[in-house]
Length: 112
Image 1 (tube, helix red, strand yellow):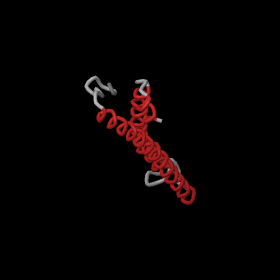
Image 2: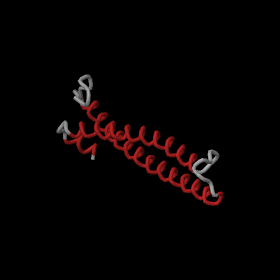
Image 3: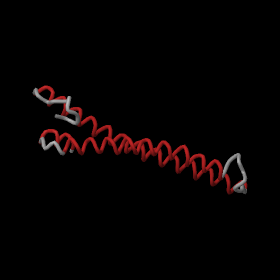
Image 4: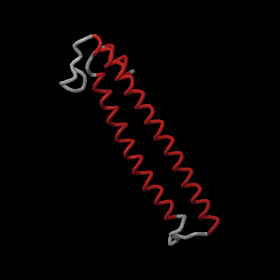
């Protein structure tokens, strides 16, 4: 059984496909981690650019065209995207942990 009761690995072909599927899940997890890092650096660059514009313009907190309000908006949108990608990352990590806990050597090696 792999993750769900209906996923019974009763043939050699199913077992091999399960190993490839687990490897794919691991690759997808690493892609999501890289995406989160990329999005975080892009968000930090935008926030830094907004602060530089604020300093040049001398904008205060009541300025709604740029600056502090723009900075807060970036954090809000970026925060939602980061939360969604983090949830996906956590779920995939949990599923891979469950695969490793099946105590099947080939599946465990696929996770690693």
